[in-house]
Image 1: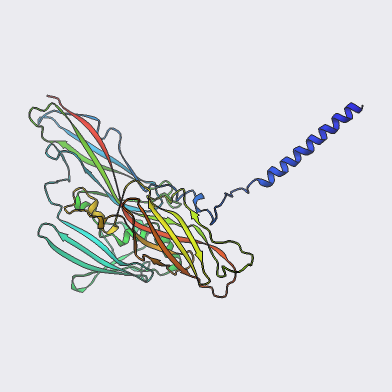
Image 2: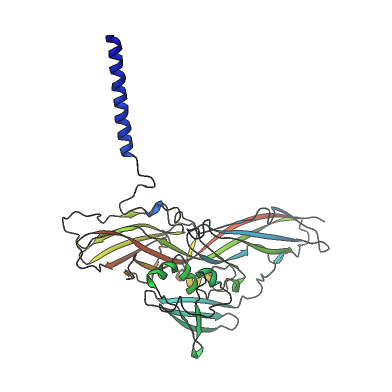
Length: 440
């Protein structure tokens, strides 16, 4: 009986220890739906707005085939180069696909004529960016006669979502803005004046983010001008899960064969030139009394972005410093997509058929499209103010912004998202090599 009582005591003790361990384990378990946060709150745990890609492309299977034959003039030597373009990032995108790299004396494609100058090309320079008005210049140069044509535009925030009329016959802004019209006004003196505004800034500004306003502002770009095939695709976000997908086809034909040649290799390069936006909203700490010893819900700390924001240019980390009047943010951005960053107003230069020369002035320009503390329409004061030039060697750039704290009587710190939207042009290229043999 004593032995049985001893065993019973051991069993009860083991059960008691098991209950204690289960209780401790349960107390450490996270609440359902909760995820660990970093020092400034974690916007990286979103389902969307992650990754380092914007637009992806690839050759469709067997289009073109890896092996082709030339049968002579009496047979059809046609083939297709088909490209799949997918928007896997978080922003809307408008761009063009260009096909090059092949011998134009041997192969011809419908709509591509390298022997013919593409004629006119336009560049858009934004003069100032900020809530209130945009302004800038559109310059079109005719490479046939060497003359230039120039027009100016101004953009205010009064009538964006209330004006009627057609903005463009080429760009489907009804699809882009969900039935909300923009209008394009031709003013006197040969100048084109564009008026864009917000009736309800607190709501409409958020809707214009994610690349929508970027595409509207740079509507004057025309990728078909230099033999590109255009597309407009939705981003992978809550409104369009999975993002947009397009199939672009080039109709080709082997038109000439060099005498004495039995076989050869030809390369096909596809170049994707597109507008894109990076949208980041890390949670920051706004503290009107940074030197007080009161209990606070947060303290300013550095945010480090490790998962990207679903775009090829990323906000990598944000440093914060608070004063009694301002919150100061040092924002680090970097080209992480493996492609080339273009000034968005000069993106037509991305075409392999562009008649001019691309210089360092045209590359590595990232516009500061929107930067504010969420819920407040006050645009932050930044240096530089309009755009940041990325280091061509490292692909990195720095923006320093200050936020004037509007609540003078507030003594408590609070957390709020810091909205950062960056605008840029981007380019990536891939190659496929095919083997061509003379059949007869």
